[in-house]
Each structure stands twice: as structure tokens, then as C-alpha cells.
Amino acid sequence: MDNTVTKTNSAVRIENVCCYYGENQALEGVNIDIPRNTIYSFIGPSGCGKTTLLRSINRLNDLIPGFRLTGGIYLNGKNVYEDNSNEYVEHLRRGIGMIFQHPNPLPTSVIKNMLLPVKEHYKGNHDDFVKLAESKLKLAALYEEVESRLNKSAMSLSGGQQQRLCIARAMMLEPDIMLFDEPCSALDPISTYKIEEMLMEIKEVCTIIIVTHNMEQASRISEYTSFFYRGKVVESGPTPELFSRPKTELMDNYITGKF
Image (tube, rainbow, N blue to C red):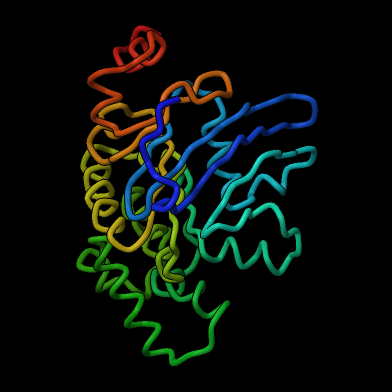
């Protein structure tokens, strides 16, 4: 595997990670360095371990009976699997935002969706929290669309608006890392474009890791890409190089649609 990112610049360092669901191995010997303040894409056919690795970064797979991980996932030099205390895992997840394939707004107002994360974890002035929420909605290019509907149900928003709301809500806790699991797969091209523009802005303040089946999306927005196949990383490196000069026949076949 060709990896050009230096460890000193890593936001996330994945070392020899293997993952198992019971007796079934989902990942084998994965090594990836993800630089700070970049967009990093995981691509590959379904069932090859991309989402398993993504969910391992914030330890969401711990909730699955029989899941086991060996190797190390390092954030700021600390292996996130060395401390199993509830306090540490909660702290870890608080610093990592996650966006899923389908939007998951709460069945309450737009503004309450935005305020819930900070009110759960911090004490502060309500008006200050509202100002923070407005700034995150503006970052999501959503504020102008919902300014007159902040007290209306978030469920009344379109699918693309709901997904941008979920991203803005995740940004309320100022995460260092944002994980995206096919965030645009259920959206129309215009909503997809707006979210991609948003991600390009967000990377200035955090590191983005995205699982996508959309090759055009990966080539448009990500600086680095890893190609997964049958639980292994076949190639990793700068996205333009991987897409223009793949080193393996597998990668070439995947990006040209020959799979």
C-alpha cells in the first residue's frame, strides 16, 4: 500500500487494524494515515469493510455484540481502544461528529435540534447557544432557508435540508473529526452539491472522513482516498494520483466500472 502522509501530520492513524464480527473477519491488516484538515474518502464495493472502519474510529461498533478489533486507531497519539471506561468513550464520541446515510433529525423544532447537543454537555447562556446555532446553520448554507422556520418542526424540511441540519447540529460541539457514511446517497444532485460545498468549508476547522460509492464525488472533494476490497486496503494515496494512475488492476477496474 502506498501511503504518502506523514504520521506527524495525522489526525487519525490506523495501524494494522483487524475487525471481527464473531468468527467473521471484516477487516485485515489496515494501515492508513489521515491528515488534519483534509477530506479523506473510503471507496470500494459494498461489504468490503469501509463502514466498519469508519464506525471503529468513534467506537460505535462496540455496541454490536461479538465485535472485536485488534491493532490500533490513534487520535492525537492515543490509541482509542486502550481505555474502555464509559467516561472516556463518551468523551471520544463527543469530539467526533457522525452523519449517516439517511438524515436523522429529532422530531422537534429546528432550533431545538441545534441546541440539544450543547445543552446536554455544557452550561451556558441560552442566547449565546442560539447565536452559535445560527452560525452553524449559516456554515451549512441553511440559515436563509430556515430563518423563518426555526420554531417549526425539523421533519417538515426536505431531505437535503434535513441532512444539512444534521451536519450543522453535529458541528455544535466543535468536533475535531467528522465521519460521513454515504451522506448524499439518498439526495438529489442539487442537495448533494450544497453538502459538498459545505464539506469543503468544514475541512478548514476539522478533518473529514467520508465513505462514498460515488466515484465522481470522491474525485471532486477528497484530497486522499483509500480503496477497500474484501476487507483489505488495496491502494491509498492522493486522490488525483489514484484516479489517474491506479497501480492495481482492481483499482482500475473499480473506477472504470468494470466490476
